[in-house]
Length: 188
Image 1 (cartoon, rainbow, N blue to C red):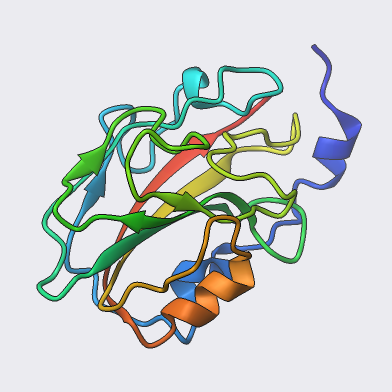
Image 2 (cartoon, one colour; image 1 turned 90 degrees about the vertical axis):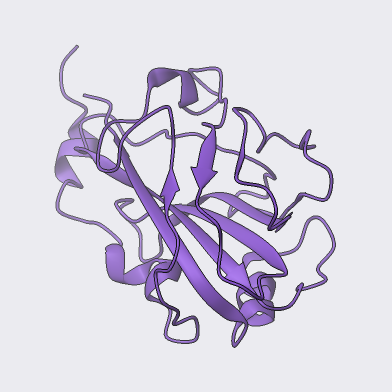
């Protein structure tokens, strides 16, 4: 298949890792636990099975983590793509209500509704809730998908369908730990 001219033209345009929630100045916290996936290693390609729903099954990968810091009341997961050709990263998951005693979530647990009790999804930029798998522009080059897990000392108390900005405002000053896992995806 020939290269997509739009993807080629936009190759150097990227939001950048500095636009991730991870870099948000109101959310500093130590990296004091780890996040992994049995589906892919840190920095490695995310399997096709987890690709976005237009072309694939759109199944979220299983995730595992070590014990979050003492005092954690709730976990929040945000998955973002900082390689989109926009000013802000694309949000692929925005999830609250993950119970601290869990050591992970199974494959497709980020579906809407989630099979995990208590999990609530916020709205992504397109108004979608739950997992939205990788769907980069063909020929744009590899995209990073950054899974960011935040340990909170207070439950934000937001209802399902909350907006991204509401979530960030609600967790500011309450992040006591964080963990990160990066995967990649590319459509040539």
